[in-house]
Image (tube, rainbow, N blue to C red; front, side):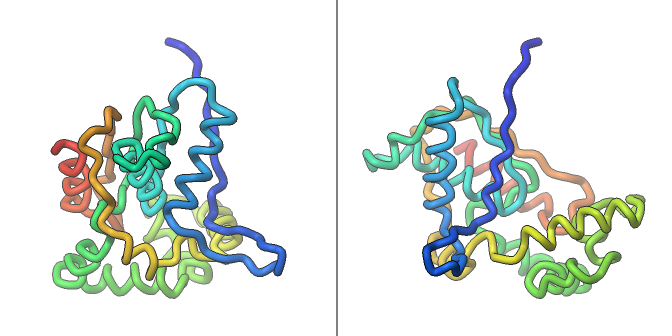
Length: 202
């Protein structure tokens, strides 16, 4: 078994323009940044790995590889992609509506936790949203502080993101994709995972 280099890209969705005011970025600027990193720092085609909303960036990257647009198609090739608890290519609206009708209390908690960012101040809600019920308080608190620090600006401008969905298909893209989920995931359900998997099986 060989050894492989791994990189964690701190792609927090912000830029710092001359005005000093940070702005949210869209999926295409994220893709451009990853492509630039791969081009300059990675010697062979990498396997990209992301979680939740971060997976959308990889989905757009994969779509760019199968695009007929010459500029997009110049992005570095990939060996594969691992999509963990992925927001489906159509977005999270289907997840939200399913939760509203099947798990209304969970839907309310998710909305409070993510949209209102209540996970930043409520340790129990932070644990229920992101971690296991058995995780000790001091560990949850540690990650809560890290997420709070990195959540000062939205990862995406959700209005612009929704306008760009669904993710374009990439029928000509030779990338192996592994879709993974969790049995007791608080946000992404099995139907959402199946949607993502089928998207890359067609």
